[in-house]
Image 1 (cartoon, rainbow, N blue to C red):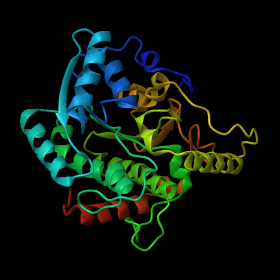
Image 2: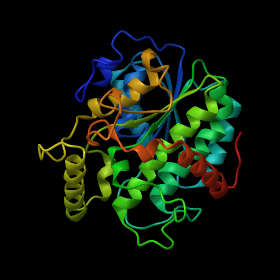
Image 3: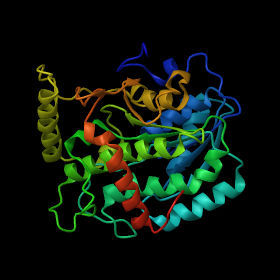
Length: 323
């Protein structure tokens, strides 16, 4: 389907594209993959709304983008995905001020942080990576439904293969907290959210995709210690062995331009139109049971019944129901 691979860059994905007139909204756009996706899309004429917690970091990122893309059409908004009130305030204002959103890229996230809780008392990784984006997406849905061939792209990770979601104890209230288990749960939730979005929106013209960007050293890695890095390496090798990869290669890191390529591909590629709800990696369709450091995924991450149950739990946790 795709001739692209692990080293494909955002510029290669968008070669020859014209995104003039299309509006993109990207969370976590103040650095790393979000900033690179913003730059690449803006370079092809897209209007991009940059969402992040820090106004200072967002403005610095926008300045860097404008230096390489003169005339880039950018907007900056402050929103904290670990605070439901912040999400509601932003989304209500944004929908009131904008006619439509063509593509929402839920790129922001936290990884392997010490045990902590969001402003609403949720475990931080599940609360930010999943619940924050769950509420944001649904609150922005009126504008998304007015978009031109709209898409929703959720950043997951091969880390979803660490473990499935725990629908009985999402906040680690009865389970001993493990930062990698928490990350794995939240990344599985991102895929299941994608699956249920695809089901609910298939008759309304909206596509959804889950993306594994690959291993990239960005601000997402700020909580990693030598101990947690070594644990990640051991777990990675174990999952690779399970997938039939006996190379013992462990982790291979991508440049940011390659790391952001799959989400840009998911947001723009015409030939993905018949694959809504899919898991993507290395700018290709995912492969069940294959190496999770590339484009392999676990079957539980695309379980439609689990996706429905997670949606119902998420509605209960954020205190809102969505059609």
